[in-house]
Image (cartoon, rainbow, N blue to C red):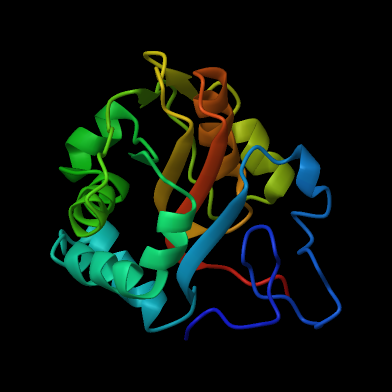
Length: 200
């Protein structure tokens, strides 16, 4: 199911009412470190099942389809944002070694090929292991991610960055990565995810 109106003008999450400009999580949009977000689909079956296989069952080929669909639908929008660099949400090293890959990195690399935009999977590091986010509320997610990410270098001359992840729920992960990127010199951050939750 594609993400349709009405939706939050900040993160793109579907909302219940047409007159609702922002979702619950984005009610103070000026405090958020990113400009806007785009997602392909609402996080419901069969999309959620597809992402589960992509993340946990080594279905890395799915990234080709996700990236092609993103390019088909959002290439013009991403071009307007003048994106200079694509940055995947990093995974803690031990977890990545156990799984064998970081699904956000696989997706980012395919998207970079489709859009001919460089991908940087090294500058942002996940330096702390965190407990799974899926059963936590927004505030608990933010606490869980406190100090979890760190920049390894300054982004010289890079102002416009697209952060890539698989799922957007409360936005805590994207926020923390965006904060790191801004501290390293980026001025404008956008995000892309395969799927997004709903605000109801």
